[in-house]
Length: 132
Image 1 (cartoon, rainbow, N blue to C red):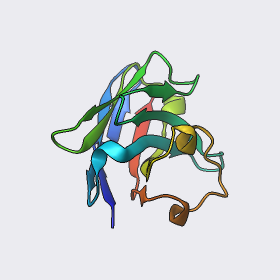
Image 2: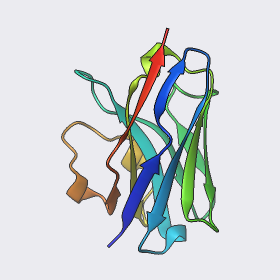
Image 3: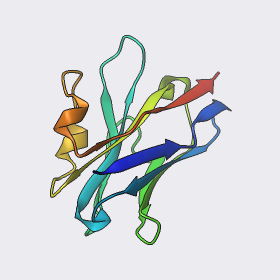
Image 4: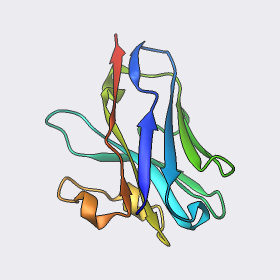
């Protein structure tokens, strides 16, 4: 069974930075595509960033491109999301999800109807609040 544990959320002023961490345990880390999606109250889920561990390729949503950076530390089985130049509209619960032998489409195209049992790993979420 694969588990992911997120950390690093919090409250920050607009223009500030936060780094989220997603620690993965229980399976072959290098086989995974792992990413983050976010959900704000009353809004659709949005896949914001993803990385395929084997080759390090990344993808970002247009809304965070150039401000967020996803990376992995393969020695620690951990994926990071560095969030800079934060805006109030980045306020949401951020979830780490992963799936073995998949592409980053699993994050890019996530919808409100997708459920945790469709993924190998789905975190508990961490709140990010950006004040204006």
